[in-house]
Length: 385
Image 1 (cartoon, rainbow, N blue to C red):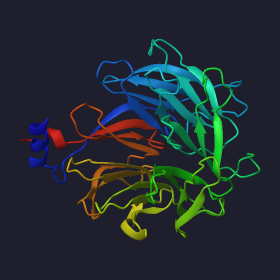
Image 2 (image 1 turned 90 degrees about the horizontal axis):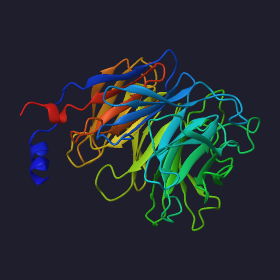
Image 3 (image 1 turned 30 degrees about the vertical axis):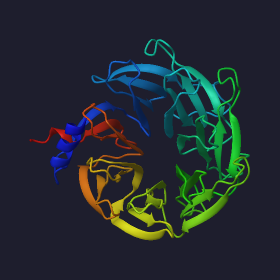
Image 4 (image 1 turned 30 degrees about the horizontal axis):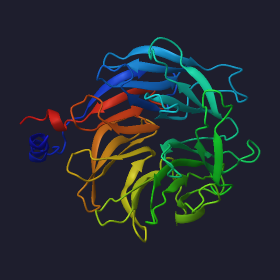
């Protein structure tokens, strides 16, 4: 392991190195989210995405399709769309495999069976009252050793009884028979303007993790155009205190916490995915610093060490195939350099994950209006030595 680490340091990711695109699936309709894991135990990544009224597992590396669920009437009181707006993975029932959680007007989960590729996965409701759930992430919110689900409810009072809110949901004692999960609304009516993606981490150093979010705003979504974080109280089931980071941020969508400059303080990396620009907030005072004001619609975001140099970089992509997919190389002190790795590839969801098992992070993209799922191969460990 030590020799491998030294080898990577000796051959850093070359500027301009080509990231090869691998197509997993193309579709006539939108694909908004994709997740990856090794479900069949063969040591290779598989991918789950929802498209064409289905949730489908694509078995890597040839990407053979296995339909896990077909959306239809009678599954929820809410009419499903043709595809989930977002998704994540969680071992809901504690049996050691990754179950699928999706948001398609209803937040639901699909139970991974023992015979994982042998047929449909059982559909169960997580929550059908929250609506406009644009983001699903998992974390141990109340630090009880159990993973929870964080989900926004971004619709107005005309659509839902829990409008303009943020929630965290506990897995019930028996998730196989429960009608819904245990919902805690920690920002009730406190996240207006079409809330988008959330981030999780202890921002103020009190030992309790906090949650961040952004809202795009615009004429149709009054009260938005902000980045903010909510401070967890001693009792996480009660209301959390909102701290605005910035207002007048048209199209604000993504915000993720991390120590980006190595000074021991939590910072935030953010994008305006329905607008323009990539930026970060330097903690502890959260000074706003523009990184790339030119990129259009950077709707997806993930953080990861893409060049294996020990610090966190970022990757984002335009939501429509009108601009670029780019990663932002961190020099370890919060100075970011834009590196374009693809053009005209839309994305609603981008994940930094090792897709080919070679020890570096690749980029998994759900193509939204590109109507595809692709992964971009990190050239770090394929460079000539």
